Image (tube, rainbow, N blue to C red; front, side):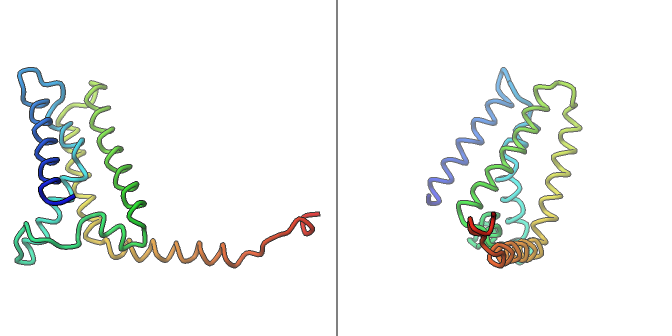
Amino acid sequence: MGDAGSTLIGFTVIWILLETTQGKTHPISPVTALWIIAIPLMDMVAIMYRRLRKGMSPFSPDRQHIHHLIMRAGFTSRQAFVLITLAAALLASIGVLAEYSHFVPEWVMLVLFLLAFFLYGYCIKRAWKVARFIKRVKRRLRRNRGGSPNLTKSEHS
């Protein structure tokens, strides 16, 4: 998907969220909308912040998006997609469940969202350490699988 396609999708999602949070009848609160778009929002803000700190245009391309970082950690593009989708679904579920449970105040949901946001930033800032750890674990798992002898039927009896 090119820039135009992703821009159209982003515009459509934001328009729908604005309608559902700001319309005459608003079925969800604005903080729930933040939880629904948490991963793309966090990724965008983190990237723009990093680019501005480096003196770059916030709109310049690079390979610092979350999927690039996950693939650099040794995951395939399909595995990165699954991880990001699961994380997005988890965060969206937290927001929606809190919205419809009616026992979590909006200000608490906002504070929790901000904590999740800063936790994301903390982890992304140290992504190379996480990537190195994951690669080490994968290497050990491969070594252990390859090093164990295969038992034949005659050895079982």
